[in-house]
Amino acid sequence: MNESVNYSAVMVGPRVTVRPVAEADRAPMFAAANDPKLWAQHPDPLRYTEQGFNAYFDGALASGTAYAFCENVSGRVIGSSRYHGHDAEKREVEIGWTFLAREFWGGSYNREVKSLMLQHAFQFVDTVVFWVGEDNTRSRRAMEKIGGVLRPGTVQRDAAGDALHVVYEIKARNWRARG
Image (cartoon, rainbow, N blue to C red; front, side, top):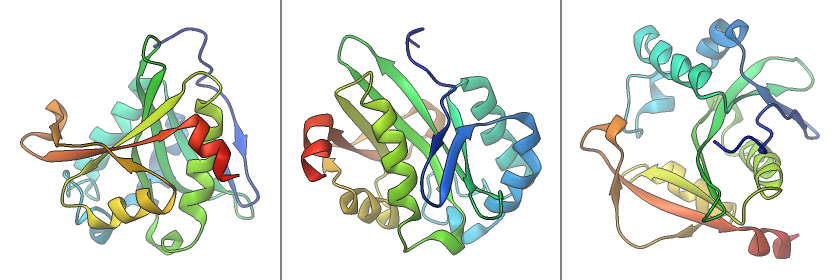
């Protein structure tokens, strides 16, 4: 990762604060992730189990680029995401490993956390990409709702085994034009 990129930023929206993940988030984040329906369409559908979640959380901590989503009113952890694969030459970074507790689906919470993360990322890149499991129709619809443009083809990620992914992108100029 590029040392000039600030992965310790705290981003505050009207209903959600996006802040760096800490070890103390393990139990409250597991409480938000411990739902099989949350991961049903995901390439790693066992993240709702303690073992599956701990692997996810350990990776988040090790990345140094992971964030917890905290509801402002209650302070409760309701999800997580991280930046990955910053390419300074291409001026591109991925936002991924994202989940949001099911009670926050279908509203505007996903848009709020993605907006906060995109606004921050567009300080150091021109393009943000999102890898989505090819069969994850829920996440694909969510990407399209926030303006993600599907790149052609499918790709595989080593950590996801044989699962195919599609890649959506959002360009800074398009994001800013949307207002």
